[in-house]
Image 1 (cartoon, rainbow, N blue to C red):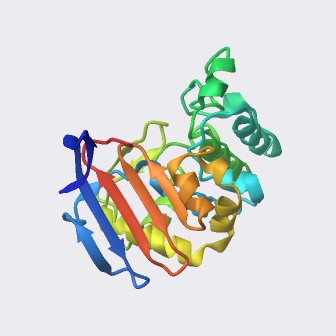
Image 2: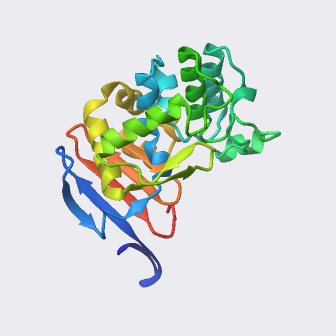
Length: 257
């Protein structure tokens, strides 16, 4: 279904197709554009659920560190310092991260950078929190991304609990972590339930929205208005309200515009 189009001098120049759905506090579908039962990869839109699994496993982060555990940050010095502080608190170093190296996504930070680093990768906050959770529980930090690892098994349990669906298939995300297939409707249901029930993580994200992405970013701007929001790669976007309503969007061509 066509979701948006771009015009120039009154002529449609580009069109974006995709899916949108809205679920209620009871998890039931309220409205959809397209078939919201179609399966998608949610990508980083499920990071708040991953952060919840870490919290259930005993990780005690607060404030900007807790917000960073759900982040797809842009690698500014402020972002990377938070990542490194999580690692330091667990007695770990940047070399323990198993995410790829990257240049900062923030243009100013990119121009000042002299090399790619793991801390600058946009998922490094999640990886640092993964590792810190392993330390708390005495779990192996070398295999923390393996599907059989206790941490990853717990994340699956949380995603299935909040989405109300069994995961039909898993693969790897761009950061190397397990990535789980789910319906768009299940994603909306999950983010709505999360926004309603999980106040600690939500408050950390809403109090520090720039940590989760960057100043001026789309999800940051929504969170500055008091609504939980998170982007995912390939055109995924979710919004959760404290009322329990959830919105999930998937743009078919993967455009983030």
